[in-house]
Length: 175
Image (cartoon, rainbow, N blue to C red; front, side):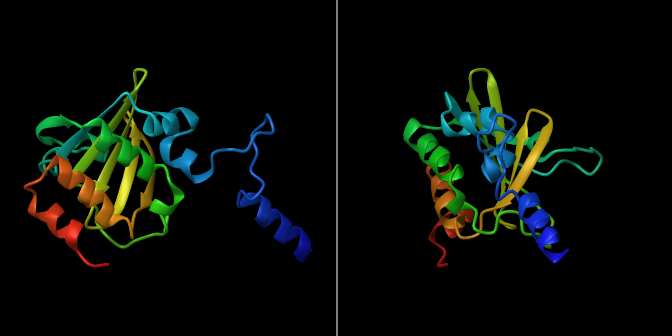
C-alpha cells in the first residue's frame, strides 16, 4: 500500500509529466506563462513595453494587478534590455523558491508586456514581496517568487527608469 501511495505521489508531482502526444510538458515555465504560446511570447517577443503601476483608488475594484492604473506612458524597451529580461524570466534559476507561500500583501509597482504575433503576456512585479504575477489579457496565469534575482531584475528596470530611488536601492543592495 505504501509503495502504491509513493508511486501515485511521484506521478502526481509531475516527475513523469507527459502530454497526450508523449512529449514532455513545459513544467513550471509553461504554468507560469500559460503554455507553449505564452512561453514563446516571453522568450522571443517582437516588442516589450514597461509600465509603472500605482494602486487603484479604494472606490475601484480591480481584479488583476495588470489592470492597475499606470503612471505616465509605457516605455518601449531597447532590444538589448528586452532580450535580457526575456532570457532571465524564462530560466528556472531566476525562481529558486517558485510558488512557496509568503505572508505579504503585494503592491506591485512595475509591469512588462511581452508582445509577439498579436499576443501578449503581462508580467507584474512586486519588489517588496519579491513575487511576480503573469497574465494573458484578463486571464490570471500564475505567480513565482524571484528571491535571489531581485538585484538583477531591479538593475534591468533601473536601465529603463534611471532616476527611481527604490530601484537604485534594490539594484545595489547586498544579498
